Amino acid sequence: MSPYVFLIISISLFLGTSLTLFSNHWLMAWMGLEINTLAIIPMMTHPNHPRSTEAAIKYFLTQATASMVVMFAIIHNAWMTNQWTLIQMSNPTASILMTLALAMKLGLAPFHFWVPEVTQGIPLSSGMILLTWQKIAPTALLYQISPTLNMKVLISLAFLSTMLGGWGGLNQTHLRKILAYSSIAHMGWMAIIMLINPSLALLNLLIYIIATLTLFLMLNFVSVTKIKSLTSLWNKSAPMTMAILLTLLSLGGLPPLTGFMPKWLILQELVSNNNIIMATLMALSALLNLFFYMRIIYASTLTMFPTTNNSKIQWPFPQTKTINIIPTLTIISSLLLPLTPLLITLMY
Image (tube, rainbow, N blue to C red; front, top):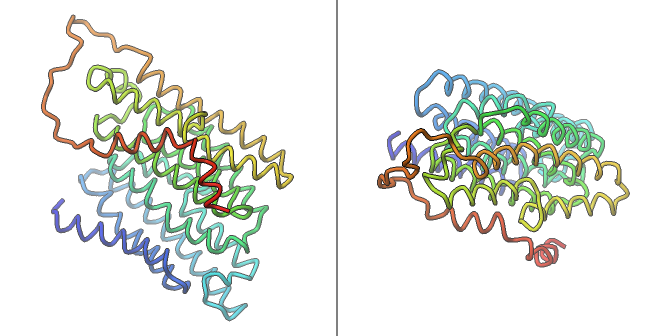
């Protein structure tokens, strides 16, 4: 891709998300979502391949459908309440329609079917943007209309997402599909707390984005897309296997890593709101995710690829890909748990 084209697409992506984040009018927010959708499609189809083209078409059709429902919800709300302001989503029907449309954009179950298929068909770099940056704009809209959300709808979406995100990833061998199902489950954790404590939902999204970004950058650095390929990673880059282990355990929510923080705070908030059954089910669903992360960890750090020769060290070719940001992101996605009291103080 030409550097000029890449620059224009990157600016458009940033502009689309910024427009949605800072707008006060529904039409401007909708325009931001549309710019966001259209800007990422050339990135998806960059190495011209039938699979990436198919993935881009699936993504476009899903996002176009979601945008149509968003527009319908906006017009219905304006018709009933005569309000175009973002925080005035006071009509219950419009609020439910908007929640379902944004759930489709985020890939929450039962609107999750496009996420694994699209992520699997595109390169790692595009998959990284799809599962991190593209979640920001719809989440910002959910955050702004959070007082008018329907709790029953949110609980249904969240529970289905965490369970199906866990079950779906169990039998996968492709890392991009596993990360897609991981994304579905994490979006479920975010949805469950959106009405009770929206700030906590944003914290969950931030930590998820940092951990997923770290993992994608590491996989892109070693050019690995399957679990099987990870078994020979130890003789390419031994420190990278350790970093992948820490990041995956953090994504799984194990203490004392950063990923434990949002899960702990969300469960605590659910229990304090007398929603103990839901808290128990969410905690149990996290074990499903942890299982398929453990499969990747087992392949990358606890097994040795069978070699027929005596030479186990790879020939040291000069590296062309940069890894400057990976150590910093690994530390952030693994070691921030002691800062929990500070974050709680900032949130409240």
